[in-house]
Image 1 (tube, rainbow, N blue to C red):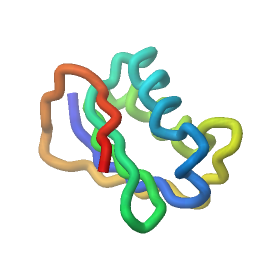
Image 2: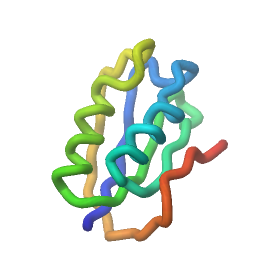
Image 3: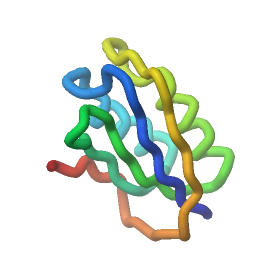
Image 4: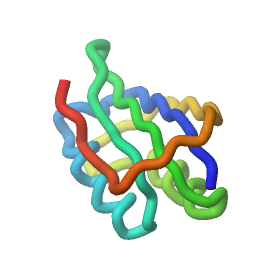
Length: 90
């Protein structure tokens, strides 16, 4: 298991990005959290095995139907353990 921090940029707020990401994470068995940032991006911290988290990263580039993702920044961070995947509110 390892943990990564994601910053997703583009038209990613107001398009059900976080809710859809939670569904994808739950289906893949990924834990962590996702939230909107004040500057219009979406930020997430996820934990899982490398193969499964790569599937989530690949999905992040696409997002839900109405999203227009322009960048996904990925940074491996110190391992964190989460019990589930949560949508965080600002």
